Image (tube, rainbow, N blue to C red; front, side, top):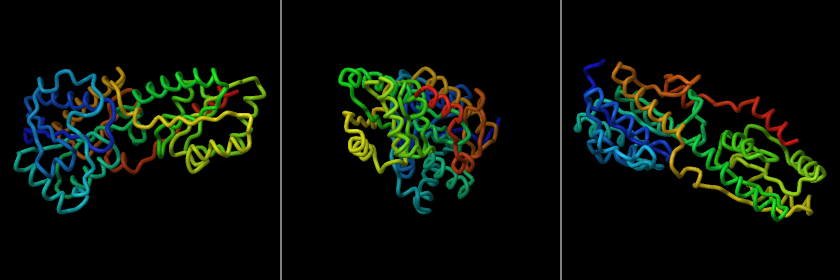
Length: 328
């Protein structure tokens, strides 16, 4: 164990995701276990610049493992993107005698941490928190499993009304650059079609699929659309196109939006957060820095922050094939 680290700061940044509180709790209690002080940094990098710090002990994180959002709050910081802003942040950390950072967030959070590490050689460790599951170096990001369960539950409810009124529903889910939520939730909810950024289904194939569904006797259909899908400019344009070409369909749109980010984290996300927090703190104490802690083959693994930022996650080809078969 490195004797140079006596105080670790923890922050959450970017979009919130279920499981962030469980990760904060894990970081705080792992620090306590190793007799290290832990400082909560409020409002991400902006709070770091402003010195918005609070000492955290094991009892300060009671009853948060089951709560969504983040008790440390989150904020985007334009100031931290400037050398001057990062200089002030470094001075604030020095004043508070903070020796290392655990940052919980996504690409933007990790980019800030890597730049800060490169400029000041300040020890940092990342924990991936985003419902999109689009971070390289981990099979699951914090919040992804919870978001999937939320989406499936909502689609199940939408299907009830779709069946009652013989309607076609386009259900838009989050996933600007990655279709993991749409693909997995679509299969889990029994969607007739799934539209994701990684696969350009094409408008004609979509129409053919819907025609076949109608001809096979399906009186209602659910199409799950990732918000980053490239077929139309947006899900409402898709609705208009289908209505023009298949007037027999009564088409509705449901955009799930930020409800996917909320709610109590699933058991999987709570356990994952606990494992990631322990690994992050203990890796810093071992002298490691500039890594992201992730889950690979159900084991904790370290990926250099640069790779986590620049690497690309791939959609599961087997799941695509399963989706095609299930939509028969």
